[in-house]
Image 1 (cartoon, rainbow over the protein chains, first blue to last red):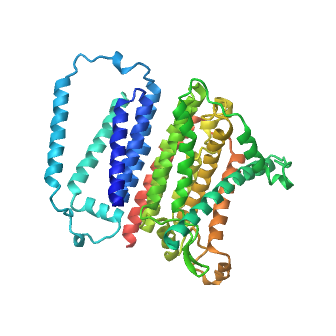
Image 2: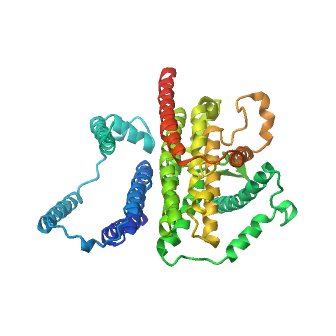
Image 3: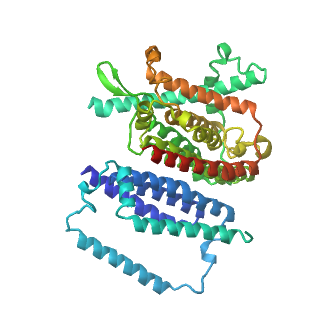
Length: 170
Length: 340
């Protein structure tokens, strides 16, 4: 009962702050709501028993990436209101259609999976280690090795690309 | 009831109050030590040898007028001191001041909690503390605080990388992220990690000076260049909150260094039986002594070294410390695999 109340409260906060992120006029405030949003997502992870993921969520997203966002927003100083900028290529209907399709897909998934029993992704006996961090590490380096390596490769490519783009003469 | 609610609550109250008192006396210690280093007496008027100076400071700061600049971003301006203070305080939840001891016939652990991801918790909470400084500079709507907060955020992000990488080599040595298990690992391996990981320890110390904005890396509050730094527009108690957060962070950093590198609550040479007479001193005292030595070192450095130039700081961080920690990490991993 207590868990359910906490879950719905945290979810409501996540959605509420997400709406504030896109509806606030001041860009810096918008970034700050994004930080709050990430913190509540971390709270949701803790509630679901994934402490390692929660700590990483705060460390990487709230403490790392959004600091860089804030940096950029403070430096460019967007004083012009967003209404002054009209995009001639904006495809409103296409965007709304895509959003509706994604929403319908999520709703369908939620309805169809609600009566299915919760199945653990791996059997507990298959993992020879205990503890949150150890299990995540074990899974990443056994069952999910190839997706993990591909993601690392993608990050490496992005990093090299950013350096090449930023530094014209190497 | 007593075990699940009352004792943790009592521990939280004790740790919070002890921290706040320690922070105010840390300010006095700093003023005294720097005064002695410069052949002065330091605060002498309030109480014998100025021992009540923190009380006078607190009264003065509370009675001062609290000013908010007209063009400031009011909400953010109010929130910034709180954002920098809260992370500095909640980190103490996982710091182990001692092992489980027998107190009045009851088993009491001398730490608030021991979570599986303790070290990650400290790093992630500390990374949120950066927002206090950035937002203070932004919300003041004034050019010097903005410059200072840009400096501060660049400095903190750069040195966070090096410091976190040194922590990884400690994690490799101990095989755990829990603060209590790291001390236990040093006990069972019969050594303090400062001796097997001297490079990591040295980089951690340099990096923590930069992370807490302390001299010689105190560019974000360089008085001569920035008329005070990111808190120029703050006055009274809000300024005091920034000040307290900085000192609370110093105590956090020295507690973490004590736990990870200096054996936490263990006595010196925990495996030498000839020194077992040292056990009459309680374990938490060892922890406090080591942390105090570390804090004294912080003050000593400030009295000794001049301030770095900003580009020198960045070059040191990115071109010296980070490559060194990566090499150290790789060597640690190879040696660990070869030994096992």
